[in-house]
Image (cartoon, rainbow, N blue to C red):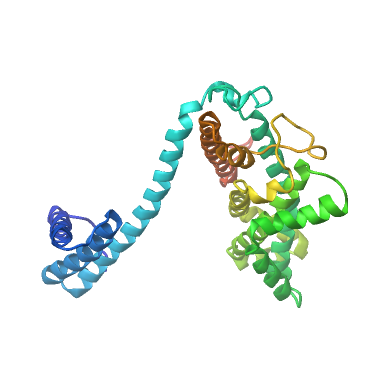
Length: 349
């Protein structure tokens, strides 16, 4: 049972119960040793839901009271998550805006000392490194992830279960382990040295299971009727997957790539042992250490000089903005474009 609208009386009851719970909790906290803002909020929420349920039960019955209480709990959980995210973004934005200047996007730290002003220098080298390393990881993981998802959902067989188990196990691999693996194989065994491609490989290890699992779930949502219609017309399975299944799930597959990027773009631990970091711009993925925004933030935030710490907060803010831009572009590209009707020469108005 879900009431269609919130009337003025319903809102008045909600606000009255909230105020009653707040007054009672304040009275209890004032007379007892209980203290703390978090404890006050948790106690108020529990008491508010209980009072609201009792009042609604007397006014509209048990069923409506349970429905209203459930709405309050769900809305409270959603507001808590959104509020926590908003607090983080606002806090980083306030701290990072102090040293944010246009030059931050075009300058590097090559000629900047630890005692220089926070507005001097920039993170151009780190932004370029992050884009190149994430791009290299996407080039590696997107085809592998799509092929693995197609195998698990469209082909299957005796190897589907062990492959799925392996993917699930990779999902829980700590980022430091991915960095150690690439360091021991790519750098120590093959003697390649620190480089951007090593960081991209480490990020690919983290992104791959996320892309595979999400892509598999998206492919499951494609109606079987589309596959059956394509097969009934005589198309082979590979043509059905390439021309029917994948285009239908395009928006979801792009979302899977977004989640993969979100999993790896802010990782620092694997980059410490692979790309290593640098204070100058390096556009060669396969030679010499390369900077990245997470490394930029990690290395500067540990400095005892306040200008360096301010630059680190600015780098964190820029990283948030970069992720937001990438997600927005991916959402725009992932929209299902409606086919526009074509006019024929013989058509009449």
